[in-house]
Image 1 (cartoon, rainbow, N blue to C red):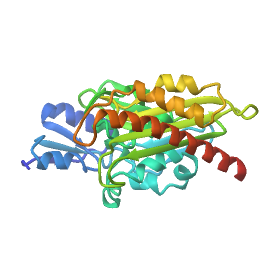
Image 2: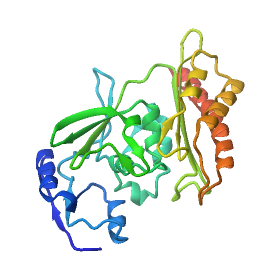
Image 3: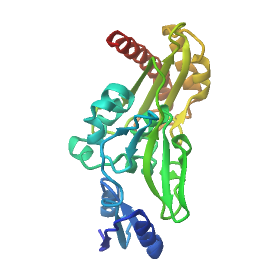
Image 4: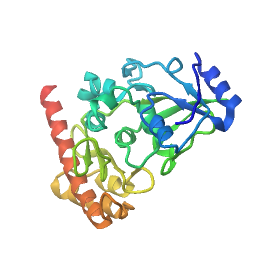
Length: 296
């Protein structure tokens, strides 16, 4: 690892100003679980590391009582999300994913913002947030801007952040009633391994007819960027959800995927597993809706 100067700004504006002053020699650090590894492997060699420790508050997940929106500070750790009763009870798809990221030691340090900014197709935290229709707030020299998370990624390891911009927080809109959601990380091992596939499904049912009012089918490691299988979603909406419907939705999602051969799995197998896992996660959504209704 090359030598570097460690800078500790106290405000967003100060952090952005520091980055602007040092240009391509600067890099931000939050949890550091990814950037430090890259520095040790000499994949990057910044001369200035700008800490976001005092810039971004490391607060617990918070839901606005008036709007119903859930806000995740970009600096919140995976462990804080994993241990949140609010997340576990009301956003189970996110809880499913976060608990499978790395080890407890890593989750104690790694941040959700870092997971997003790295923009790797295998990032477990991304798929649930896309399924939940999350948006992100970004701050830079030009001020603040917001966009839907699904549009944040532009390619493997690439995102829309301009030089010096900081991902500030993630905002999840209020969920419809009678909603269930589930995520599955598919790989050879359950932990400490990148997924061969990441599959997230969210279903909202109409109270009277029990037909599907909203569907989200989101896939990771199935294309250059995480994406929604829009054809599968359109197929589900308006239908009474049963095993046959979920199986067809899985087949459609598999056809929409852009899986490829890699060291972790061949394309034909991944495509088949997309179909299988979309059906299974859809079934889990229905189970969770039923459980929630029985508790009400």
